[in-house]
Each structure stands twice: as C-alpha cells, then as structure tokens.
Amino acid sequence: MSLEKINWLMDVGEYRRVAKNRKALREPGHGTDYTHERFKDVVQRIVSRIHPKRMHLRVVEILPQTATARTFCFERADGLLPPFRAGQYVTVMVKVEGVRTSRPYSISSAPMAERLELTVRDNLGGFVAPYLFDGLKVGDVLETTGPAGRFYHEPLIDGKDLVFLAGGSGITPFMSMIRDTVQRQRPLRIKLLYGSRTPEDVIFRGELEKLAATYSNFTFSLVLSEPPEGYEGLKGFLDSKLIAQLVGDIKGKTFYVCGPRAMHGFCRGALKELEVPQRKTRYELYGAPEDVSKEPGWPEGLSKDMVFEVDVAGKKIILAKAGEPLLNAFDRSGLMVPTLCRSGECSACRVRLVAGKVFVPSQATVRESDRKTGCIHSCVSYPIDNLKIRI
Image (cartoon, rainbow, N blue to C red; front, top):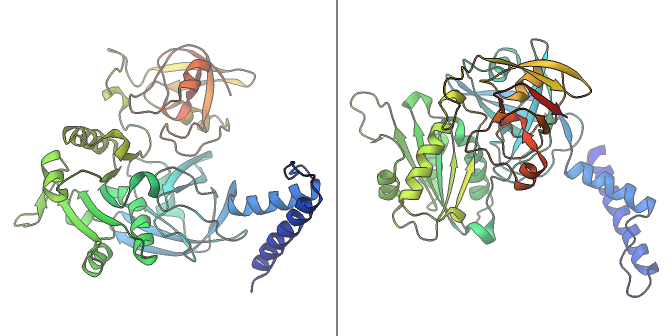
C-alpha cells in the first residue's frame, strides 16, 4: 500500500476518533463543535484530498483517436486522483507564448479509473489545443483545477431514460458517462445520437460500436453532415425529425446536449419543437462564440476589431478588442482572474463593471444576483465601450 493511501486512512481514522470524542463530550441538545482546532485540521486535510483546488497531472500515455484528436492519459503527481461525477471537467492552466491562460476539458475516463483522461481536438485557430498537441509529451506535468461542472446525471431528477446529443468533441463527457454506466452496471437506458462531419472525424467510434453491440441498454446512432459518396448510414443534422425518428416517444426522457455552439442553437430549437420540457434538458457549452459579431443583438455597425480601453481599478489600464472576451485581455495583460468553465456558466471569473457597457451573448447564464450587483462574467463579456472594471 502506498504512503499516500496510508496517510489517507490515518486521517479518516483520526476524523472518526475525534468526532466520536466530541460527540461524547457535547451537552444534551447541542450539536458537534466543528470549530475545535484538531477537528478542523483533520476535516481540512480530508476535504482538500477529495476536492483539491489544484492538481499536478503527469502524462503517462498519449493515444491517437483521429487525425485531429488525441487522448492524454494522466496520473496525479501530487497525491491520489480525486473522485468526480461522470461528465465533469478540469481546467488546464498553461503558459503559451508568455501568456498564462487556461482552458476547460471534459474528462473522458470513468470515475474511479486508475488514471484521468482528457480527449482533446486540435483547433487550427485555437491557442491552447495546438500547444498541447505540439508540445505535450509523456512525462510532462500540467497544473489543473480539481473536477468541476454540473453536466452529469442526477438520478432523482433525470430518471433512467437518457438521450445524449453529441457533436464533434462534445462526445467526451458522454464517453465518461457511458463508460461509468456499463462498468458499474447502472440501470440506465442511453441513446447516443452523435453528429459528425465525416467518418474520419468520429472520436471513439470503434469503442462506441463495440459497447452498443455488447450492452442492450446502450444504442449508438451516427449522423454525418458531410458523408462520402455511397454512404448508407444516417445523414444530415440532429433536427427534430431525425431525433423523433431515432428516439421515439420523448415522454419521461432527459436530453443532454454537448457540442459546438452552433449545434446548441440548432438542438434547442429541435427540442422545443418536440415539446421537450426545459427541466428535462441539460446543456454543456464549450467556450465563447467563434464570431461574437454574428450573435443576435450585436451592436449594428460595431467592428469586432474595435479596441477599447479597460481601466482595471487599482491595477492598470489595458486594451481589449470588442470581438474577444474580456478574460482574454486579462490573460494577455498578466492579470490573474480565477477561471473554470470559460463558457459563462460557473461565475468563477466574474468581475464588477463600474462604468461602460459590454455585450453578453444570449446563451450565457448570468445569475440574477450578479446582474443586480453589477457583476459580469469576463469569459463571455465583450467590451463595446471604454470600461472601468474592479477585479
């Protein structure tokens, strides 16, 4: 048994002993005193292992998936891998061309696996993905956050009949859920509808076909938008007609959607047309829009290349383009803002807007409390005026 596991068991044993003593000493009608220093120390150590704020992950293997996708397999270099929910992600922190930045990547391995796997698709116009593809090798260590995100199955709410609508690299969180379901023999019925451009772009195709042939509670339907000549499989897009054809009666089913932003808008419309209740849908967004100037509500006549001044109170004045998120400008300027999802969902990167105006895409989920207090999510806020910001 490793030293790390021994320390873990000792901490759990100490926690139980201290808790038992505190319970024996407490007065009738009073709860446990969680402020006791010895008790707090033990709890803090256990919580930090289960929910680490930061991890260092060492690459142990790199698996090719397609010509543009790879799976990076990691072991933890500074402790045990923490538990997570199938469908969650970690945020990878890197320094590229002198700029320290981060990107979230869904975990494709199942919980309780011996290693953590991130499946990444190269993005020709991207910043971090090409860096990982070109520079990351076996033995390298990356800093990441602990697992985060709310895109996972909730048994009491979501039920047992699940429909996964995946597009491109949006298959990654679903892969974790599917693997978890079959490995633990969970009593779920899963229908996966996977949209891809061409057969060569399909990630995990061999494994998905094998799982569908092995497990009766999992079905896999591949839909190609740019099929080769003579292709006899499903063609087109995941529209309401095709979803109805493959899924049948939608009553009681929960729909999960993960893929490019364009796919999200398409699928939202399709599910609305099929009258799927909003409470029976879950969405996972991947990053900011590729071209925010094409989003509904973008100011008419404003060029996405327009540059504005951003006065970051008490720090410095920086420049930011209208067509990119404020968070990108913060990264380039060396201003450290906490981040997780970079998609406008988690609120980790929120800052206070003191003066000026920003554009926020309609799909961004901003809390009402943030709106009332003047807070914005910098990962999906675009300057359309000179700004004053407080971090």
